[in-house]
Length: 94
View (cartoon, rainbow, N blue to C red):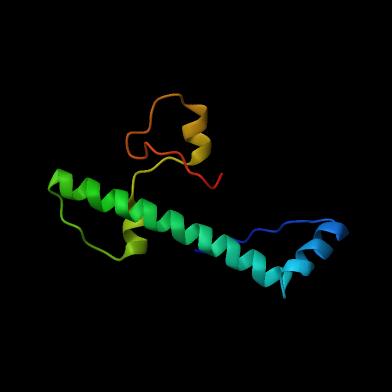
């Protein structure tokens, strides 16, 4: 399953982004995909460490492991003051 997002930027924002990027669309896609890859790596690493500590087998691809990981979204973590023991370090990119 894939998800599609649409954003709207002003003419000034588009012009400014064009000043620093050859293609605004390509820049936005690259930025989002790079941020996702960083989060995937973080989730994967936490899940592998959790499975090792629990003596569980590590099976599946990185994507399968991430999709199966029992994690909470940032919105859920922010709305619940209970510490998230699986992710004690705040995300510096938010």
